[in-house]
Image (cartoon, rainbow, N blue to C red; front, side, top):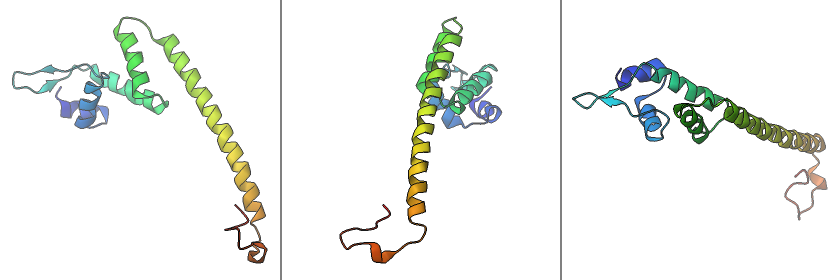
Length: 129
């Protein structure tokens, strides 16, 4: 199928497909005698995998690693598990930082519930921060 057809079937753009090809996420398409890209039907599943990987928060480099393992004839399951473990740890750290930030902001907001500009000295911009 041509690049426009693949883009439509995969829910993306031709520009994105060219980028995926440049980044090694999509194997180079066979070229027709007139130079058009001609993709095999299994390209849709590969693009879908890339999109699912991105939705899971994996980088394109990580997704390419997984594809390289699969293209090498091996199941990437353990590698995927390790990447997901690392991603979960990152998210847990982000949640902890956001929880701490939330508590700090809630305390600041509570202090600022009834502003009293007379209590701010000229040396301070705002006593609530």
